[in-house]
Length: 341
Image 1: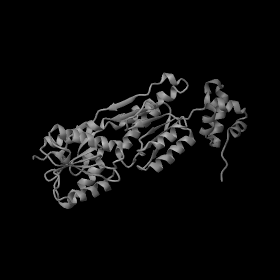
Image 2: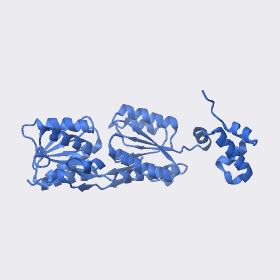
Image 3: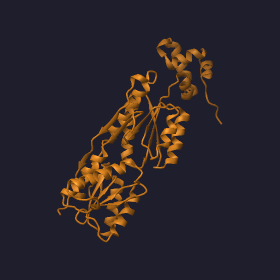
Image 4: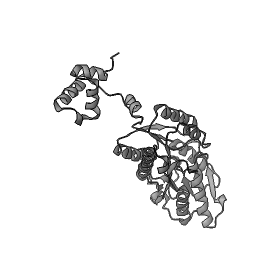
């Protein structure tokens, strides 16, 4: 196995002290140009790469920000990561992206990894509805910001979208189109986002004088296309099938659309569909999907900026005020919900 090249090897090859090599790497303006060129030549020749972990130990600050999301297979979270990475890069930091796969156990493992690596801070979309993972992580003293989730207390920042308003937008649109029996393909009931979107849907029904029985909930274990197809199959088996369906995210909606297509059910004439997130694939679906748009890139960028503010204020914690940023959703109407009733 090849032996790694250290700073002492570079110093020996360049005929200078270890301190001079360090200055060339960290404070090049303090080194004479001829000496600097000789050291850089040795670095290039030997293939030296400085140890980031050693640098962090000396500086006491990591240049890595952790990002832990529910599902990197969901383009919504890819956009969140894009926004966070952009803000982190502008601050000279990198982002370690991890996927809990909606599993509290995997979430706990990744939070432990972040603690071991002493990351600068963490952006977190929680998978554990009990909050135990967050409480365990809090003991490490590493700042974190909740993403796509409202902070319930005043002990951390959060960036989210008003999911109650988003659920209301979706179902109000369906009610205005004439639908009186609507299914809600909801995803795991333990997720706050799923519950809030359901609350918004019920609010919209109440506004129209319709009771909660007008919403037929079809929970799923996951928030992916396969779960949507399964929910679509269950929907097809209902004797009094609703005329419209609101899905807790676009992947579920695309799965329902696939199930309807396979069964010969016409969308939107036989069944109207509304999704949530407005991922790129929503507009490109066989029947372009009506969806509630979340500003995912903005959400990621704002969360990273809040985390950077907090980490910069760590030496003076009294100067940082935890904030809860709530963004507003937008309904994007496409053909999947436009049939006349």
